[in-house]
View 1 (cartoon, helix red, strand yellow):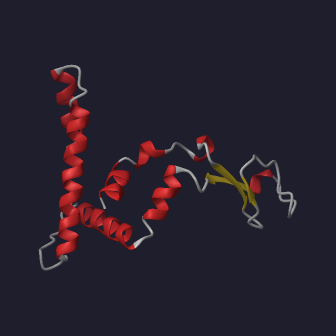
View 2 (cartoon, helix red, strand yellow; view 1 turned 45 degrees about the horizontal axis):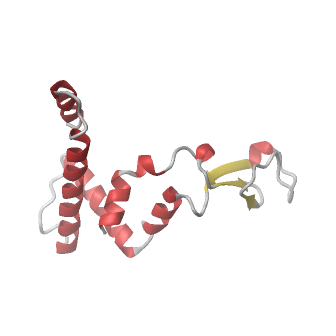
Length: 138
């Protein structure tokens, strides 16, 4: 569970854009043919280069995390992130609205957020930088 939460919180650091992914995959949008080397056009259906889509490959950390979020635990973590976002937008959520398991996961998410913020704050080189970091999180 913690792996999923940490991965979700650090998702932007897992891998960059699809074009920069070390395990990128080139796929034809017309016929579905794919390969790991760059395609100028599809060798199967002769579609031009505009029909070629670039995505994260099967061994990419970002792809692996996305797959993990399709598991039952991943679905639960995603739901808890949505509940926390709804709460931050002002939606009233009571203990009658969520399960005990969802509450525990939301507590884990908040603890991981605080730990991540503390890790970022310890690298601050001055009081002003620390203050700016704290203010930007609000």
